[in-house]
Length: 436
Image (cartoon, rainbow, N blue to C red):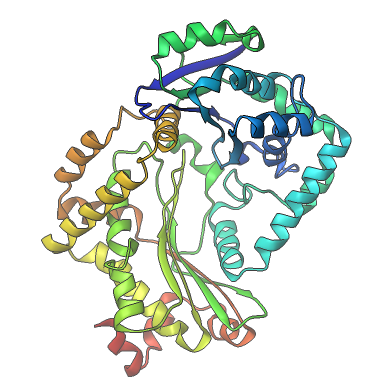
């Protein structure tokens, strides 16, 4: 029996049906020598299942004006079906066939492998990918979060049909989660169970997490010892320099996660953020700057990413370093905290405007074992965050950043084997004025 849990959201004003199927098995579950196999799997299940070959499946989805896709993440795979409400029972069986009866032929496996390899090669052409890959390897090593969800070209070339079938057999033993918009959970369960394609599914209420999330006992699997305050370098044939500055932090269900998201909002959300103003408006030093703090089941990266030129790299690094440690050493002003909170609330509202976005949020909430986190409840929690909370959380999780720089040979030569202490000692008077 394939275990599946159903949840639902009631709002369906415009007659649009959305189904989100969360498979709690992402790239961090890739075997050591098969990095990328979950991405191959999630691509293949869209290329034929049950009574439909690749072309048939594409035709039936398009004929109803529907959308069917899948996305790979470190912790999970999310499949999305979106269609007119009147067509839902004609298309829902596809989801069951994708899980239970996908088509894994040799030619389709090779095609998907080649597409994945092409995508990885395109990614590698970018500076930002190079600097982030170097940073990720230093922080996560060969652990579950140590590789891109697309995988490794070397490993992908070794994957065959039998490997993909083995992964499928492991996936169907896990508890899957369906989130559906438009009707009540009990009605959903009754109606879906009547569909022939779901006859081998067990509709239970158990958690989709096989093991209770315990990040402390799993830390050694996810992060490795790193030399604190180090500058890592990667040589690229380009004059543009990509900077990654940050550290690993906590799981999404940690009570301090929301505080870190307010810090991220202060540092890098929008044109009012401190980094945008210091690096783009006051001092035109970067092409782009932002904060990356994704949702993760274990140790999420919290990083500042910036793109600049070789001659401006020192100034950019000094400003980033200064603003990072200000968060740890000095309380935010009330106006700064209020602005960060307001921006986060606004972004949260924007990210849950559509029923598809709300369905995915519901799926992730259940997957990460969070309490019902509608906007009203989150707003109440945000309102309780103080400047003391900000400095406490920053001290706990942001005190050991690691820097990765990707750029031309001259830039790499300047920074190779440097540490922050060296950088501070070698600051010129001209550089220091940018810290004000």
